[in-house]
Image (cartoon, rainbow, N blue to C red; front, side):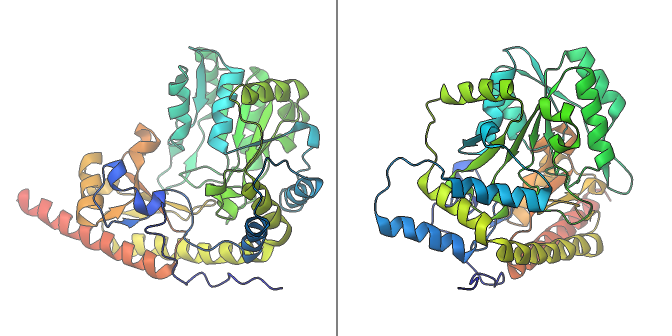
Length: 403
């Protein structure tokens, strides 16, 4: 049987399906009927092999407690080895209902209330949310924005923040969401060496690891035995195969002591057996979904190129740099001179778009908008045209007011 779901231009109606992306605007205090480009899931049907696997579960009609089989571990392990030169061990393998769940449990397992946890803003906002919710302190080694739109790490500040705040845990986002960096080997090794020097554990969120357009993703813990001894690696098929709603993630902990501590923390929540549909979907995706994913990756890269070119050429006072990784375009509107509130009003009320405002990712994200381009090209074109018209009209109106 061949792969069926390779037409990524085909529209899939998601409204009225309990979709957070399309059906939750009022719940989040937004107007209805917005064009939605915010939360990071895709608008494409997943691999037909995944559909077949979950259909088999439905037709069996028994949805009892489930546990992963050897076939599951073999499928995930083979993908990691082939795509990322990483061979996880069964002993250090934990399954959770999501990466954010794993991040939360790591924060609880490896720090105490009042401890500081280091992140690199602007960064995926659930990091800061879960740190604060668990009564820890957020400390940011803010990324440095160069004039050409590329972000870099301030390593001196990184070490200073570790020492001054007695950091025990650093959350690495690799590839980085939202700025789209794929960290080089040299950058990762420099971060790792500083963490070894100061005895800092690294929680590596590598959920976007398959979406790389420039450079190469390197699994952090594979770069050094010392890094592996102090690392938790978080992965999931949810981004790669659009399976977020099936609640399945694979977490790898090479250090037996760290694994035992994290396992105990997870078990304390009462979470025991993974979702039967998640297991079936994950296995099928990694076993048979390569053709689908590779085609999706090419389509998404085309969308990224289109969006970046459009923003740079057609939206005044806006710019974007092609992201090295992820399917999330990080658009810069700082030259408009608008406040974060003004920018959000233009995007939300004038363009009628639901994007993720940069301030969600930390104060250093002010003036930016994150745009999810994993959608049909026609939908992306419609959204970008609306954004262009809104920005032009707002700029003209502001200029008249200042005359």
